[in-house]
Structures are given as C-alpha cells and as structure tokens.
Image 1 (cartoon, rainbow, N blue to C red):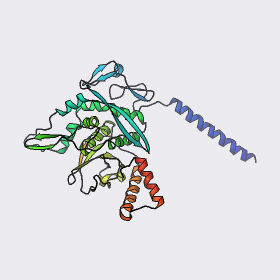
Image 2 (image 1 turned 120 degrees about the horizontal axis):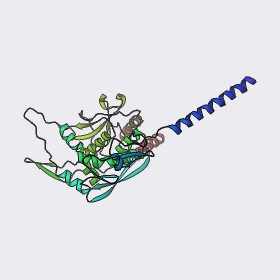
Image 3 (image 1 turned 90 degrees about the horizontal axis):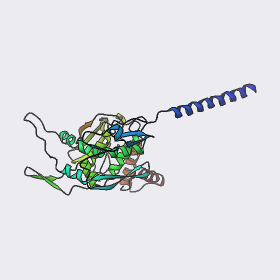
Image 4 (image 1 turned 120 degrees about the vertical axis):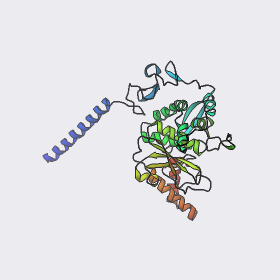
Length: 336
C-alpha cells in the first residue's frame, strides 16, 4: 500500500517539475517575428524592426534600401503616387481573411514603360528564364511588394502557414487576360503584366499571377521554380518540398495560381475543359528553404479521387459528399 502512494507522489513531483520547466522556458524564450528576426533587432529587410513579435517600420534605426528615401520611420519610393487600396482575400483551413494593401499608379506607370526586350550576343541563346528573372527581380517593384510579404509574416508565425496564405491570396485574385497589346517587331502580343500590376489591377492571367506568387515565396526565403507547360501554354509555381510530395520527382510541389486549388493537386481543370498533360519546362527562380510536412498532399489525393467518382458516377454517397464539401470549405474551393 505504501509503495502505491510512493509511486503516486513521485508521479505528482515529476509532473510539477515538468510544468515548472516549461513555464521557465516560455518566460525566458527569445521572441521572434514571422521572418525569423529576433525581438529587438532589425530585419534583413529594411526598414523593419521586430517589436513584440511584429515587424514594424523603424527607418530611424534600421535605415532604408538605396532605392528608397527615409521619411521619419518609413521608406518612400518616388513612385508612390496616386494611391488606392485593394482588398486581398485568402482562406486558411476554412477561415477567411483579408489584407488591405495600398498600391500606387505611379509604380504601374513606371513598370509599363520598362523595355520588354533583352539583347543577346551572337553566341548567347535566349531563354524564357531570362525574361522571368528580368521581371521578378526588378528592384523598384521588389521594394513595393515587400510590405505585402511583411503583412503576411505578421499574420502567421508558422512558415508553412505563411506559404498557405500567400498561395491562397494569389489564387483568389480574379483570373483575367490582359486587355492590352504590345508590338514587338511586326508582331502584336498580349501585354504581360508585372507582379505589381496584377496587385494594382486586382486581376491577372496565369503568367502574371505565377510571377507574383514566385516573388512572394522567394522573398519569404523559399526555393522556387516556375513550371511552364508548352503544349497548353500554361504556367504554375513550384515550391521546394519533400520528394514524395513533389511533381514528377522534381523536388518541387505543384501550385496552381489561376484559382483556388490545393497545393500539389495537378489534376484540376485549369480551364473549363482542359487538364494539364504535357511535361513542363522547369524554370529555376531562387534557392532557399523547403516546405516540411504537407497535410495538403493527402487532402489533394482525396479530393482528386472524389472528383473522379463524381465524373464517372455523377454523385457521391452521403459520407463522401460530406468529405468533399469539407475539403472545399477548408481550401475555399467554391468554384468546384
């Protein structure tokens, strides 16, 4: 009987010690912001400063990038003229959110006047990647989009959730081809929007939306590619992930950008009647981190199977229908 009470007493003492340890650990844990900056330090992205777990502008301490001008604690671009606010919506595990983001006509005017051509020497071979990097790495544009990256990182501490918000946010920007044409030589082609123009117009086609998402993920520190499907003339994003989740063993997870879709699901109709069937060209954009555990992979597999049943049989039983509707709500797949 005594041994029984002794065991109980030891158990209680162990629980108390564990509780005290974690309490002490949490009190003394150094806080971080969403980009990994430690509390009380400047971010690698000027002018942001980590205060109480939130990135705030503090140009008086952290300074400004070369292309921006310091204005008290803010860094200002000469292209920040004629502002307007756009609402960017996203869904994270069924919960809807929104970001009010200020965009500027002055920046759009600047981008619209940039050269659309690249000159090569006789021994150089033109590549799609060169044109992609020319747009994604444009320095003035980058500085104007970084505040959006910061807002996303202030919303979610978890890096995977930051990716999920960025993906959903871009997917929920309405899909629209450009109404403008440009002339190159004797040819007229659709105007290719810069990532910032997609934000300003609050609409974009697969190319502009994919470049916007690639830019956001790149600035969050991830390894990113673009998948270009030549047969379908379609473009999506690839983000570094474990091989078992990746598209055709590329090491990158498939991310559709034209509308809401589950990360790794490459079996959606990207138009009303067409699925992707060709092998994509992989366009490398940036080195960086990889996603870790991805619950989306199993969800995507389940959703693909349920869609196949609907296509083949026309309906689902009550249990499968509940699962189907739950996945649609979880990822905001209202179009399906």
